[in-house]
Amino acid sequence: MKRFLVLLLAVMLCLTASGMAEVALEGLPITDEPITLTCAVQQSPIQGDFNEMVILKEFAEESNVNIEFQNIPSSDLETQLSLMLASAEVPDLLMKMNVSAATQATYAAEGMFVALSDYEEYMPNLMSWFEEYPTAKDAVTMSDGKIYGAPYILAGESIRMGGKMWFNTDLMEKVGYDTIPTTTDELLEYFRATAAYDYNENGQADEIALSAGSIDDVMYLFMGSYGLMNRGSSHRDVYVDDDGELQYAYSSERFKEELRYLNQMYTEGLLDPDIFTIDFAQLIAKSSTGRVGTYIFVNNSPVSNTEYEQYTLGFTEPFEGPQGYKTYGYYSIPASSNAQFMITYRCAEKGEDAVKAAVRWMDYWYSEEGIIRYFMGVEGVTYEEDADSPGGLKLTDYVLSNPDGISFEEVLAEYVPWAGGANPSVATNEYFKGGETWPVCLAAAEGLINYVPEIVWPPFSSVYSAEDATEMASIKTEQENYMKEWRAYFITGQRDIDADWDEYVAGYDGMNTARYMELYRAAREAMGVE
Image (cartoon, helix red, strand yellow):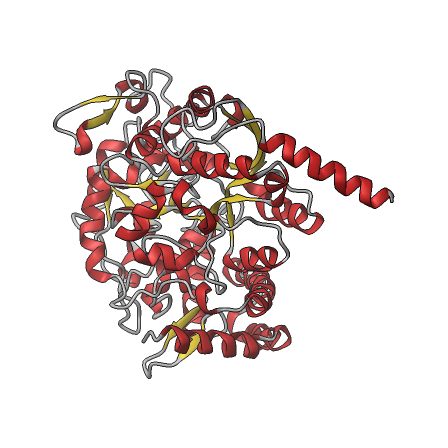
C-alpha cells in the first residue's frame, strides 16, 4: 500500500507539472508559464558560475524556461558524471558533459535518458543540421535507431582540427630560422636552439622550447609522424597498417618510437616539465610572458592581446617522421558520438511538457540566432555589425583588446558558454569567432587539410549493441588509464623504453584487448569502411 501511495503521488506530481505550462512549437516564449529545470554542466577553468552567465540569464527571461545549473569542474567531470549515473541521482538535463556513446547506450537501456528523436517536431533546427551533415546524425544515433544526445557540430575545416603547432617568427629569426622545420629531427634541432636562447632577456635559463595545453595534445599531434591515428581523431587508439589490417595503437612499435621521441625532448629539457599537469591558464601565463617559444593548442589564443601575438606563425604541414610517415590525423568528421545535451528521466517525471520545453530550449542553440548568441554574446557589448567580417559580424575591441589585458576567451566566458568546447550548438566559420577562425589559424588549416587521412572514419556507435558498447567502454577505460600511467614513466625516463617495453605490452593481455579488437574489427566490417 505504501509503495502504491508513493507511485500515485509521483503520478499526480507529473500530471500537475504537465498541466502547468503549454509548450509552443515555435517562437518565444517556449512555455506560456515559467518552468524550472535543473542541469549539470561542465565548467572550464576560465568560466564562472553558469547561473550568472549573461546570455543564459537573458534567454531564461525570454523563453520562460529557467535552468538551475550545477557547475561541474572539467577536471572532475568523469568522476562526477560516473557517480551521478551510477547512483541515478541526476538532474533534469546534462549539458556540455561529453557523454560517450557507450555511456549513452548503457544508461538509455536502463531508462535513464529520454530519446530526443521522439520529439523531432520540437527540434527543427537540429534536424536541419542533420540533413546538411548526415554523418553528424549517424554519429549520435545508437544501435536501437534512437538519438539520446545532441552533438557539437563543427561546420568548418579548421574547427574540426585539434592541436596545431604555433611558432614565434621573431624568435625564429633570432636563432637563424626563416622557415618552420619539416621533419621530426629538424624540429629537435630547432627546439635545442630556442631553449638555449634567452628570448625574454631576464638572464635566467627559464625558456621552454615546447609547451601545450596537455600531454595529450603533444602525443596526438605527433602520432601522424609515426603512422598512427590514420583514420581521424575519432579512432585514436587504433590504426590501419600497411596491409590494411586494423591494429591496436598503444602497444605497437609505432607508438614505442613516438614515445622515444617525446622522451628525448623531455630529458633534454625541451618539453615543458609541467606538461603532465598543465592547464590552459598555466599555458597562457607561460606563453604570454615570452617563456614559451613554441606551443601546441587549437589556436593561438595563449598569446592573444600580448606583444607576442604579432609574431604568430602556425605550421601548415605535419612533421615527417623517421619512417616517412607525414599525416595530420588530429582531424574529425563534423561531429563525434559524444552527447552535449541530454534529458534524463528526472525531467520526464515532471511531465511531457517539461521534456518538450527542454527540447525546444536545446534546439534554440542550433538556430542562426541561437548560434550567434551562443558564440558571440550580446550585440553592442561583445559583438557588432561589420560588413567586412564573415557573417557580417565581428567581436568588439572590448573582447579582442580588453583593457585589463585578458584573453578574448576569458572575456567572453562571462557572457557565453562555449569555452572548453563540448557545446550543444554549431561552430561555423561565420559566427564562431574563436581562434580557430582567425586568419592565422585558417592559414594553418589551409595547409594542414592537404595532410589529413584520405579516409576519415565516423564513430562506430550505431553498430554496437548496448552490451558490446558497455564492454568496449570498460576495456577502453582500463587501457587508457594504463597507457597514461606508462606514458608518463617512459617520457620522463622513470622506466626504460627498451628494457621495460615488453612488460608494458604484456599488461594489455590482462585487459581483454584481444576481445576489444575483435569487437572493433567486427564494427569496422559492419560499417563497411576501408
